[in-house]
Length: 374
Ligand SMILES: *Cc1c(COP(=O)(O)O)cnc(C)c1O
Image 1 (cartoon, rainbow, N blue to C red):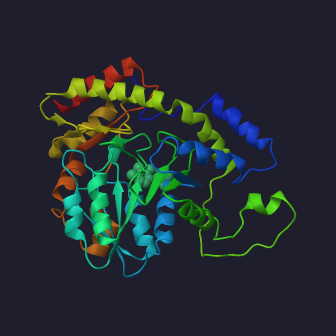
Image 2 (image 1 turned 90 degrees about the vertical axis):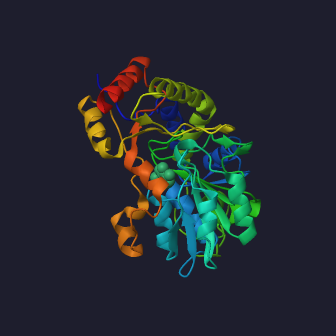
Image 3 (image 1 turned 45 degrees about the horizontal axis):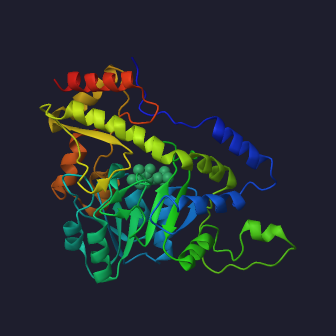
């Protein structure tokens, strides 16, 4: 048996929705994007959303809106995809890493507090694998020091914890609609914000800081436009929005299937020696974006090879960002600086997790994992 690491669920509904957009004169940011933004906020904790080209752009727009740059510091986690830290580097600010909670892999509020200096301007937390960070504590820390709190919600459209939803407490929340995410338009993203004013600024910043967007410019008679701010070019288009709109109604049903798969993995792996996995804490509802296991440090790469030999698709989410060549050279980082993150990064393996995974495939993955760690 061969089990793919990931299969998207995009099909006829998306084809139909894209065809409808293609029959209209307007392909870029217009009515379909507006509709997506309005529908999307019904699923998250932020009241306003601005559609962009990727989560990376969403994070960049947040930092741009905050005016973060050289001389500033931004605190984030080393247990994430490199994008979360790279956007800080691209502003010219310094990336300051803070260790994670050993149970979930999410940034630890006490570690964040410890890293704050007079130069700190923002915190970017990551809801790892779909598990919400301790947002109440992070919000308190940010408020006490007047820092911007930015949520990387790339894994976390459907997440909740202690009554808090994804995007609810952050000043900005960055969502990803990349090819393998729980909602996808191949590439895409959105920024969640709290006020209409913040949303308006981001709508300008996603399009060069222009005072009028394309839909406004071409809707009626020509009018001159101005440039109010220095912005980027990363506006979501109607084709992406049409795909995403078709997927929103099935969001919870697809989560329910992923939850079922995770429970089966957890049942099967519980108590197996040499095998562990992150916890979903009491009070938390995980978006179940990725399912990871932790094996013995020294054996991780062997287990990875063993699973691939059995044709089980695997990945590593993630190797520690502070130890990547670029960060190591720039900040002279050393092993041991963030022990909890490093331990997870050295032990972790990601297993297949998507709604169309069959029961027979799940059983085969379980059997292969247990055989590979022996
Ligand atoms: C996928 C991902 C990103 C980047 O998303 P893009 O939409 O590809 O820019 C950022 N952070 C995390 C944690 C991710 O998994």
